[in-house]
Length: 178
Image (cartoon, rainbow, N blue to C red; front, side, top):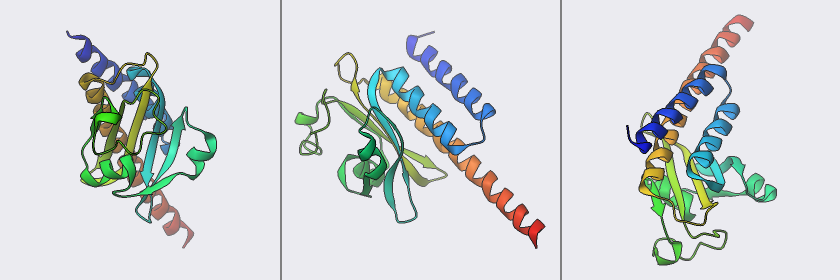
């Protein structure tokens, strides 16, 4: 079995355990982000969710300035995360200075490499998973992009499942209170 296959299986096992042990969106989001950072050797990352105003806001993050993490949001099509959300395609950039799509927005990337991946559930955009600045200074790889896509897909499944569960619970509670 290849190293990548072993990593994929390990990630899927960790995600399965997280889903079984938690019925909380925040817990699962944090676990997913930690997996993404751990399995790629990144220093920073964020999971942004789409809100009712169709803006992406940081739901959870690692390695980012606290004030930035609390206040940062972008519209679909704006900045890197907004671009990824609009295109609904993951992006692997090995050198932001050489990428004409993003070369003007790289002031907070130390290593000039990042991965940004949409989180899509049942064809609905839910958010964007971002990681950047590998600890060893090297660019991210295609294999790491694959791992991030697996995590983003599982995050979408978990989020969709939990939201559906919450909706049913809300409905039952309302019916019981009537």
